[in-house]
Image (cartoon, rainbow, N blue to C red; front, side, top):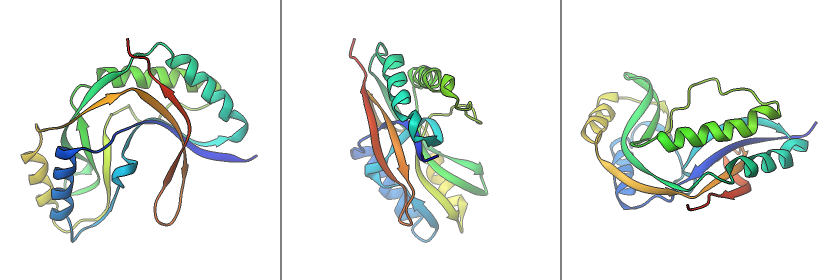
Amino acid sequence: MESLRTFVAINVKVETELATRWKELKKLLLNDNIKWVNESSLHLTLFFLGDTPTDKIDTIKQSLERELQNFASFSITIKGFGTFGHPKSPKVIWAGIANAEKLNQLNRIVSDAILPLGFETQSERFSPHFTLGRIKQMRLPNGLANFINKNASDILQEVKVDEVIFYQSILKPSGAVYKPLKTIKLPSL
């Protein structure tokens, strides 16, 4: 059976303050082995489906549309930076979310749309963030820790969440390419 690697996410167009701090971070970590996310691909994953049988794609689109039809658009604040993994050997660099209540609700609704279709519950608790880079090897993690501490409470960007996108993730040697399969507009109430 043919399948596609899929996920559901929201996008963000990177603006001035986030872009400036991200550039500072890249410059600081220039000599480390980090796979940076392309700014044009920056997204927040709400639900990762993984290998999805192609015969379920249309059903997933319909279920997402049905579940999201009354979920109003909202705004979030990107605030501060952090890492996943041990502080001495972090694995992921991310930008955080200050007001995640609506994102948590959105995650539950997306899960309600997908789980009845035979997909498994996410293995980890939903922790909304924007992944900026994946660390392959880092020489001096203290520089990153200092940067994170210095920028921990800084507001980086306001984002209007007015659509949810069902994506196909195509893995290539140069990095993943994300192809929208369905964009669901959230009503403004």
